[in-house]
Amino acid sequence: MSLHDDLQPDTLRKAFGRFPSGIAALCAIVDGAPQGIVASSFTVGVSMDPPLVMFAVQNTSRTWPIVRTAGRIGVSVLGAGHDGVCRQIASKSGDRFAGLQLHSTDDGALFLEEAALWLDCSVEQEVPAGDHHVVLLRVHALTTHDDAHEPLVFHGSAFRRLEQPAFV
Image (cartoon, rainbow, N blue to C red; front, side, top):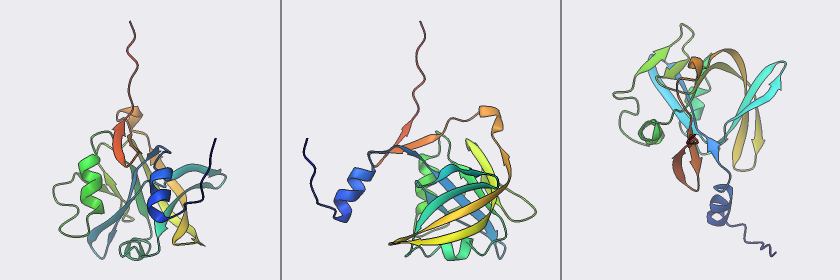
């Protein structure tokens, strides 16, 4: 076994990509318009009492400062068919919500149709963490859609789907 100390961003990105994760879209209506970011660093089960989830956001994000001002943020854990949706919302230009099927709450949380999970959240706390901030979100309501949609998985810098075993 051999470890090396090359901790350059490209090397770290490739190494961290070996850990499969789900992808969440964190969206809200702000000043009457949809706003959102996507995060592969999203983690559930941070705390059950109070119910908390978290994600990490780059300090250079131009959209998070807008989204964080919303009273409520809709977290949509992206479904198996959302790879294009993920790219669209993560885009730095154009109408990032054009043609998407969206649902919103009276409080402004914004959700994507066919997501594996919806969580209605508010910002609980932000903690500086190097070139990112770790954001704790308090969960106020949720729906699992009765497991109707499989999650999209990000691994090795590519979108993947969970494989269902074939039973003979």
